[in-house]
Image (tube, rainbow, N blue to C red; front, side, top):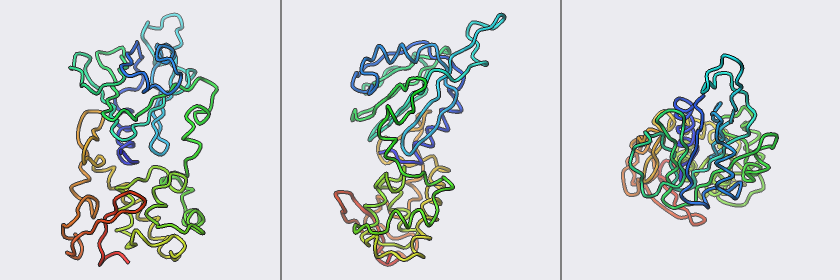
Length: 295
């Protein structure tokens, strides 16, 4: 599943390529991809003739501010430079295998294409999703995004927020008698963190994944907070991680996997001490770690 670095990579790419271009139509090839409104026709009608003002990220969700063009005398018909935010939001969650690809309209359709959004240029934004768990929403103007995209209301603070302090993380972990790895996957503890970067952050902070949250010392939590941020920043600079499906908006793989410390490296030598990387399962998820470097 794409995690924070992959979604952030997509957000940055979308902000480079799609801003101030009017949506002139679209095609929904798999109806259940549209989570709100329930009618794909209503979804397409709501977003048509609007431009993308900017893309935001909340945890693993993408939110595009939609703006409608204001046409004064002398404005060109397709000019959206004077757009005003008035048409709500377009929300996207990639889930396990979702991809947002910015392509020429004549590009042959991938068999797993679920939604196409046509722009006034010769380009389109395609939502490709092999496992079909991804979703899209239109949030009407005047509505809070979390009132429509209910998963947003459950999100914790973003790791890049100034509010993501040692005290915040310590308070979230105290009294939780479960492994720290499991806690880090809880989006009500840290927004956007998933299996890959939880493993990487725990290795960097020298903490074993099965240690209970209640057994962590303050100094370990300080290291963990710092390492979460550092690992995420490093992955973003590498364009995220591609182990199976992730592509950025230009269809390019992420490169973090080539420098990962432990994730998906079972049996390979630790990059620090040479000990073979081990793999275990916690709450049904794989965890990779070094038994020498992590305590």
